[in-house]
Length: 207
Image 1 (cartoon, rainbow, N blue to C red):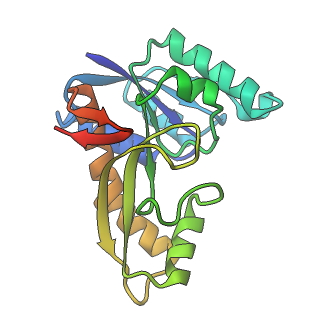
Image 2 (tube, helix red, strand yellow; image 1 turned 60 degrees about the vertical axis):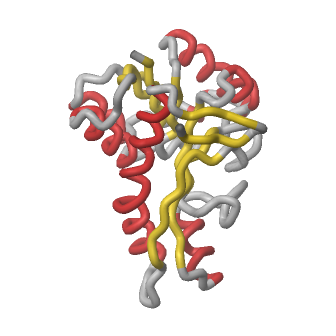
């Protein structure tokens, strides 16, 4: 049984999707063993508490730079014996000391179809604002491994939704979360925990 550590910063809707999937048996071969928050008082911590999942808070504001913060996160991940790390609304870019220690063992969800609308500066509603401004007809979400570059790791799963003429960024965000993120993230986690993802030439293949 693999230890899944979930990193959060806010409300924890993706964490809740993982918890629900774990309870319903969708996630096989792994268990959420710890939730780590970068912010004190994040509602995601309440979600962990309500489901008897241990949690820790490592506030980003207590560290002078990304490197020192990442080293603190790395220590916590090692203490928790993490097999898989899931970034679920985690709003801090981790230094490569973490990504190099856990190659192809950190999963993130990005609310667009990589390689479009991704990279530094593309997060939260900013992604959906850019999508609507460009006028694309479909959008969606990407579940991918994390490497040292923002949103540049191997893609595991992608799913799409239609972009409708009267969409606002908030409406599009909700549609993507409900129809893609909350379904594909638990699926990707389960595939990892069952050793059903292989890496060839830097690309991820689902068995």
